[in-house]
Length: 341
Image (cartoon, rainbow, N blue to C red; front, top):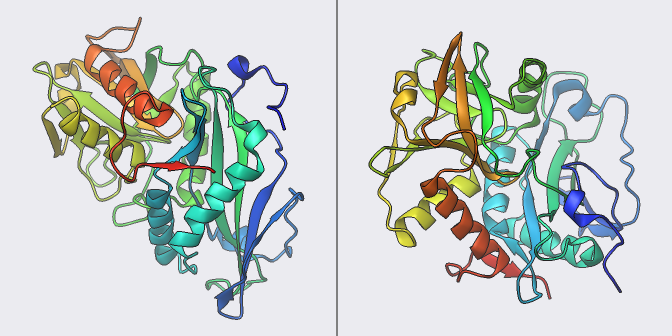
């Protein structure tokens, strides 16, 4: 076998059909064994629960080729745990976490030729997802579900890689108070679509959402958590019950503490503080860290001191260290890296 003949260095962050995907079905109160399939088509009834009442959740993680030629994936056990939390909140059956992890490894192995080569800047993105598949006309949870994992090679999430981006403070809300903002439900992302399209039309890469109750405290963007660096080098992360617990953010916090010996503080961040930070960035599976150079707040522009030319020194070191762990050039904490054999 040999790697696919693709222009790895110029891949978009988009979908490309690969060879295999994993499928398992829940029926009569139990999951079947699941299997790998060539068929990328999903066939469901027109009255499926996912179509009527948006009963679906998903995850995202990546596989990489390391500097020494191994194929690995990063902390899939945390994706399994987070999806389990999402399923419980949406009254969906939990796919066993150990089987989730094994299915991720199996999907990578079955599509090994689609894993981009080391140094290309591209990765193999895995998308586990679950949805209600049987007919539901009354407002209630489905009785049957399908769990699938697809994969696709992708380039950087934001064009230009780690070049600082321009964002805006949004008037709209990403999630409701005491709602589903802390789980990875499809409905959260549906709520953000109108706003992200409008942001792009206005020249912004993303929207920054404030807390839905008071619109005072910074929460996250439509697709990523936010990191702040104070002028004295402290890493600050927003604290809120309606923020998605990003695996990348949690990993970066540990990297900051254990590898770089940076002080970390999790607290509420008032939007009036934005001008006081030295560096600001987005973090998530897709982008890792994408620096913010400018924040527009209803006619007022906040220029982040790190500038619009390159990532700041603290976020740059955090990104370099985490990607080094993922790519095998920096020793990983125990249990973070799963090798595909």
